[in-house]
Amino acid sequence: MAPGLEEYLILSALLFSIGLFGAITKRSAVVILICIEIMLVAVNIALVAFSRFITPVELTGQAFAVFVIVVAAAEVAVGLAIILTLYRQRHTIDTKKVDLLKW
Amino acid sequence: MGLQIAFWVLALIAVGSSAGVILQKNLFRAALLLVVCFLASAGIFVTLSADFLAAVQVIINVGAVAILIIMSIMLTREVTRGSPSNRLGAPAFVISALIVFILVFSILTTAWPISGAEPAQPTTSVLAQILIGDPGFILIIQMSAILLLSTIIGAIVLMKEK
Image 1 (cartoon, each protein chain N blue to C red):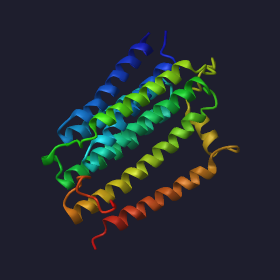
Image 2 (cartoon, rainbow over the protein chains, first blue to last red):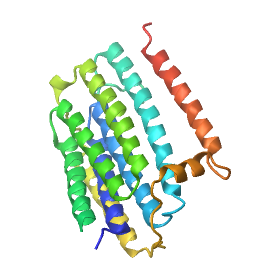
Image 3 (cartoon, each protein chain N blue to C red):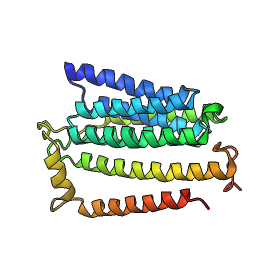
Image 4 (cartoon, rainbow over the protein chains, first blue to last red):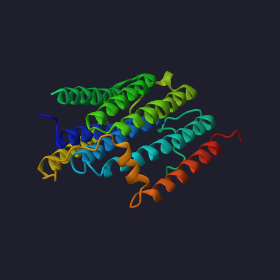
């Protein structure tokens, strides 16, 4: 009995909530980015699982996963550039101490 | 049978390594565990017969994204401070557990329209058809080219010495 759609979706849900927990609780900006990457991987697993089990010939889900990977790469590049600029100006990337936009 | 063993082993590795990212105090080891998570997800793509996406995952996420993250950890010297948490631990855990519960409940109670067809093998020609074929995503491909260009310009402008 090969694993079905439900197993893959439950794995994806687990990975997503682990990433969400980290993104909420961590204080270092780099770790928050890492957790967002884990959430994107979870979404990709769900998309590819849908593509495999529901549209195995058309592969629509895999096309979406390609775009998710593109946007994730762009997001990481800009996010890390912002973090490095922040570190250069304030010498910290602790989100507790970076409160420029907090009112 | 082999597929089942591969799935469960890879799922255990993926969940374990992503939990390790959260629990690990050392930032550098957390980034290396992220690489393990990416590799496990590439393996899961292989078990879903998505060969092209598995290769793309290894090349882009393991080859580029993880290297960028490790470089930025080295450049910011955050390794000495570890990976501290804020005080939102309990509410975040409750929210995450609630989300996982709702998702698993809805996954198990939905009647999925499973297709019994054999998966397309290899996937590259089908993906090319759907991405740049006639009723395809050609507009979104061009938009992502613009997105990547603006990303490059944005990153260069942000990192330029003032």
